[in-house]
Image (cartoon, rainbow, N blue to C red; front, side):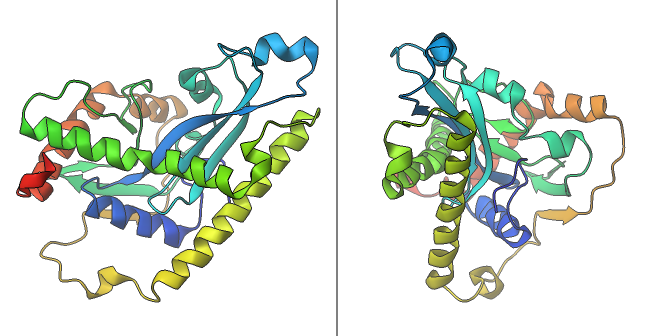
Amino acid sequence: MVGRGGNGGDESHGYAGKLYGEERGFPGMIGSIDCMHWEWKNCPTAWKGMYSRGTGKPTIVLEAVASYDLWICHVFFEAPGTMNDLNILDRSPVFDDIINGIAPQLNFYVNGNLYQLAHYLTNGIYPKWATFIQSIRLPQGEKHSLFAKTQESFRKDVERAFGVLQARFAVVRNSSKLWDKEKIGNITRACIILHNMIVEDERSSFTQYNKFEFQEREEVDTFSINMPLNLGSTMDRRTSLRNRQAHEQLKNDLIENIWAKFGHFSNNI
């Protein structure tokens, strides 16, 4: 129920998530990614320097991807608290399926341009890769202001998921008193699995049908999911993930797409 890679989770939920991404103005968006620190009260003394940062308290970092309904589809939990989001990203398996050529092939259109890599909404510390979309720090003009407001709003999904996870499970909210790091990781994953089970149960109580099946759509779906082709080398796929030019083009297309979709609402700016 918790995937190691960025395309974790069940297939039906991934499809629904991309539909909601499109409805929000971000076609091809899987969710938002961020990190949370969990205090490790009984961290061994020999390790405290490696696990402690500014506060002086040792922590273990949880990296997660959450979707619109707070479903957590990716978890990476083992990094020491001295690491920031970039250091953790270098060790994270979030893109392993894509790099290894086993992730489903995704095709979607934004502003008339074809893209083949799903993306995540992130904060400003993440690199400008083709798979990450950040906000605009100092937006100039109505289009950029609307994009920044929309991105920052939807990026909060993962932070909301962290808050709900801590509210539901006191063991995650409070500092860990265990000595064994592996046991702490098992507890974390167990809580996330239970959290996802609750999300599934509550989601099924909202509606018994897919509302998109009953909505009139003027255009065809802007994305499709196909079986992986496993073409090209590992280095080629890694390079495509980190393509800054593709990032800039996607971001500009998303700015135009969100403006076309929501710009006519005067209270959005």
